[in-house]
Image (cartoon, rainbow, N blue to C red; front, side, top):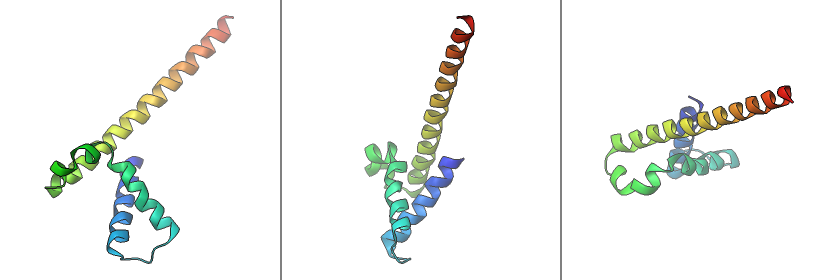
Length: 93
């Protein structure tokens, strides 16, 4: 949910920076630059296909959000499992 919110905020910052809607400042430029991170991997590799249709473009962003959420969840799960194993080994020693 947080990843989706950040993607949406960065998308709007990127669009407003591109169209010169607001006065450019460091915070807005940083959010606009972070949008490139949220476009990876689908828009990096499939932009010619996804850029042709608006609904595919946003579907790619949703897929990226799900992908990043899966990666973060996997990392948290692996870290908690690793800590649990270490704790059990310390108790047994």
